[in-house]
Image 1 (cartoon, rainbow, N blue to C red):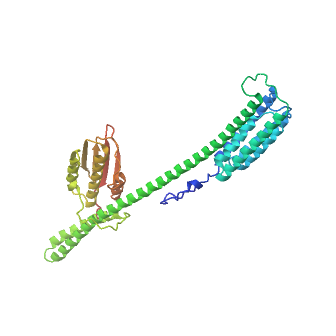
Image 2 (cartoon, helix red, strand yellow):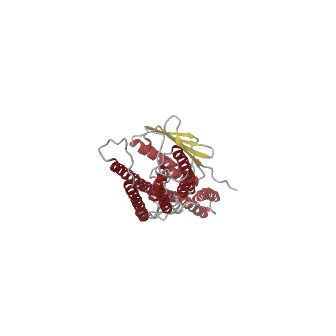
Image 3 (cartoon, rainbow, N blue to C red):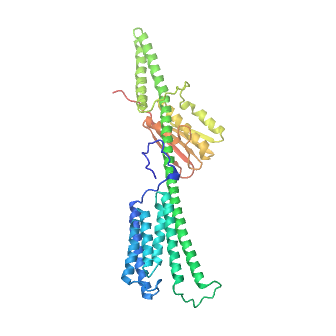
Length: 431
């Protein structure tokens, strides 16, 4: 699989899968090849010892046991690097296989398994698919030529005894047909299984690529949605701060006009300017770090806590039973806090209506000594999905973070889902 770039790249160039080349084996696969080669070697030694102990030789007049063991060792050792050099291993194993049979080695079972593994590995791991195809076809053709040569030599030699032959076909012909069909199935199976393994590896690479593409796309969408929400927060805070500045200008102008004639009234106006300036400074601190948008600011006045009734009516119109409770000493809160509280309730109710499958929602607002706390609890499925309005819970957290607030969300113990938000309301005192 091609190297995938860093996590913040917007798009990865998709390979041409018809020209895909399988990467080399991993260190773990190389170690596994060594283990497989050792196991095959041990099996070959055991089978050779058993065949010699029983005397069930494939060829007459085989060489000594030491020579037979040398042949199986020579056949097994190349498997150590079969995935690193599949073509070379297949050619070496094929040559050794024919040489071992020409030397009348006592057993062909394990050498045949080694040859099968070598042909399979070329089909599964050789990067050049044209070479993989024709090299295997060439080796299989060479094996059939060797088989044909062996059969002709057997037919021209002394006829074997078929004491129990009882079938309708001549025993010599039946023996030839059996050998041809068995080898045809053997080599065809090795070829097909190798192709299937390579196709499976390419399919896994495609799935990994698609998964990486999806992850990058999701990251990009998330970053875009968060940036859009920050822009929205910045616009809202811009409206609030602009309002404060306007109030300061009006009060300062009034104080200037009555400074000589009514010092007490001028003092009250300047006190209002001072308080408004502190509130504006608090809002500006929240605005720092939030992205600014180039889009035109909505000219409609920013909503506040007095507008929650409209949200409740909209939720009721959607078929949801809404109960609302206010606790503590009701007081004015900074405009930015009121706006953020409104947005949190709006987002939570939108999620309940669209995704929670709930019948009832309870909205509670608590005025604490230095904070405003919101709780929105429903009796739905216990899971609320994100919506397009402010990107759901991500938008809530971004909005609350501006004011140093906190957000807790999760399924309720009995049923439904709970959203709890806390927004500090204390303004900065005069130093």
